[in-house]
Image (tube, rainbow, N blue to C red; front, side, top):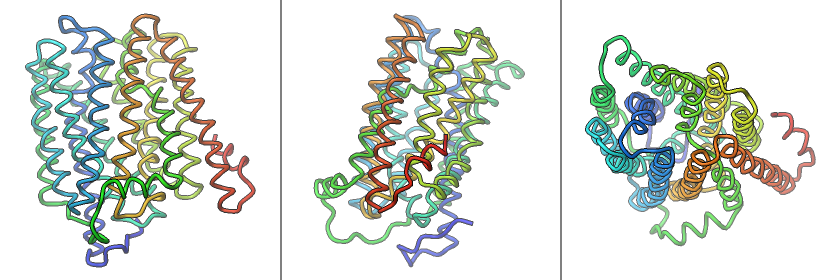
Length: 415
């Protein structure tokens, strides 16, 4: 069972549990909708006139960077106005209604506009949603809470590509028709927000001021943690390049959604175990493990022969990395900031990650286009190696502050 949060005594235990599962199922249906589209989008984009791998990298990088940057704004306003649900509903609503427009895209610019609009919706909802989720359980159980949310989220991401595959292969629908049908699960998610999610934020301790809040957050160890996360994100390419790797390894276009589904199965399977492990041995150590898995994924693309088997293996490895990182990097934040500033803290975290993500995808896309996958993933492997070293130093500093001596052995025991 999840340990319940006692910061807001006016909220019942049933309401707390309801929030956790309601937000999980919102993500479940939203990701089902998303992945019906995104499992097909890279190949669809590359088939449009004037497209290229550079365009893929720039579209993904720009859209995600803008999304991450705007999360700082939504997090700040959710702290200021003490309203999380409104931002969550608005953000999911925007994304749900613009994604089906991929079906009428004719050139890469159309994809860019729609993708950016979708990511703006994600920006509006993400920081307030994560803050709301963190306020529903005690700090010692944040790992399993975010793991449960990630599992439900990724369960939808597994089903989405399978639905797309079924529609294409067995029902004979076109890619554009699949894009339109993604509206159905997205609408279900909006209904759950309206009727299932409850506001769960206490009264503000005085007037909220943005700069004061930011200075308070960055005054402690959180700033060093953000630096390490930023270094890692400078090399962390997204799933599109895993699908591109599969295509270049000879996997048929009709099977690419299955590669993506397997990636998401691994993502889903590891989320709750990673969350439980982080609650037991420390979130920083499990975060280091996630960075190590990404390093292994990059080296697998670099060193393994390009064939169908290894393309699926790389997808499994990448999904495992994503399951760990997407759970732990979100669960670790509440341990460094107070509840009233969590929206802002999540916003700053996403801002740093997003800017780094833009650089990473633009660089990886360019390197992949002109020099091939080997050079591109070598760059990513180098960035992740620096991040692992940085996290090792961070753990030593944290342990010394707590007056403990056994650092190196517990850290390496997770690898």
